[in-house]
Length: 113
Image (cartoon, rainbow, N blue to C red; front, side, top):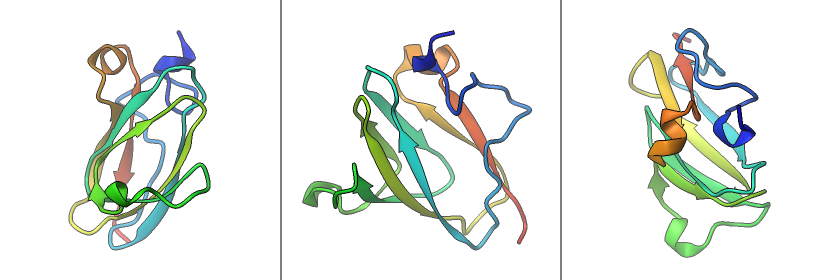
């Protein structure tokens, strides 16, 4: 399987969760695109705030809450999200249908604090 279709070294497995944020908390997550292909990454559950792109402040047009991020090859983005409403499993996936269809997605599970 191409690494361009993996998150954290694996393709999608509905029984697996990569993270377990607690309800009512705010976490910072890093997305690092280690491939030679850009990905349109979409995170469910909450709106996210882009803190950094490659260690730099985001441009003015990205200084807002959003849930989808274009991540260029070898780029790192740092996000902050607040888990305020629901527990359960939620997806992180590439919005490019070919990538999503071939396993470029994972999930996290929001748990009670």
